[in-house]
Image (cartoon, rainbow, N blue to C red; front, side, top):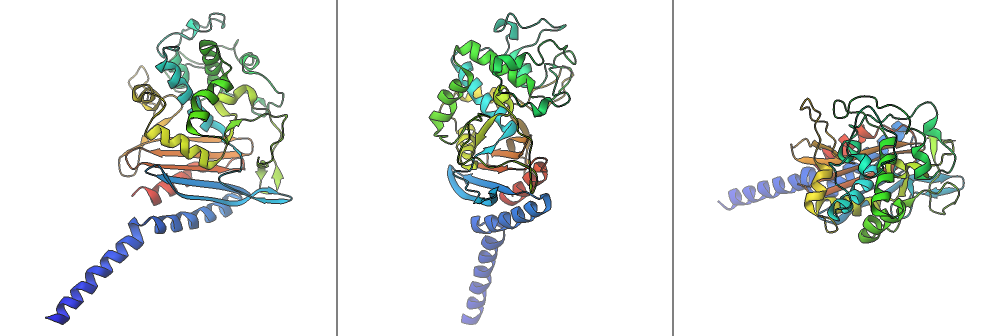
Length: 355
């Protein structure tokens, strides 16, 4: 009998150990994610990458891979290295917009002409919600506009596209673009009577302690800013992103973006109702779901739980921010290389941390 009990005890202890070691333990998941991150870096030829992960409001993994600068060599530090976050900037803009909704300074269902009466009239009217959801018909970049390299204000940036016709009747199609967020930021600073960059600092960065997040000034060098690459050993073309800061012009660290993601899960600075407007997918007039709210893509995980996310692709930058409210997990990944397949890596990380 003693031998049987000892055997059973050994069996159940072994099963428990293996279950923790190979499926549920945080250490095992991090070890797996780290291995896959190194493989991904090699496959994509990424010079430098920063990954941070939090669960239940606590940082469980934060690590830099490779180099922020290759000559002289400077390693990536997830707490200090400043990357271009590209279109994750749209999510930051959305949170600032939620503040204006709470203060009744902006009504999402009002025409944009209520805030910018002098904006050139189009064949169709469109509202703030359509603008933020890529449903207004504003065009995307043409030619080399993506490589704009003249320091330009938001108001001046609107001049690039303001006289162009809408691509379609609003809410009949979804057409992702960044110029819509240039227009949105102009509306926001007019409605709040505050410079857009100051508005975001006051409503997002300062309250959340995002001390390493700021607009990239193309004329001011920063000691912790990474170099930007289009190939592993080849620098990207210089660009000036000031005018499109709302859609793709902020610098940040992977750890600062964790603070931002945690606010989306458990909002302390905005109402849940205003935030829900940003994270809930919009619909076309046909009833088709777009999978995008305002500044956030909205979808479901491999476990059929909700997730909010945004990828970013810019000059010398490929990024992703993943937010899992049910699991209370936030993942941010920043790289200093153009054209990295971040969707693929996002699926890998979701498979590791959400199962």
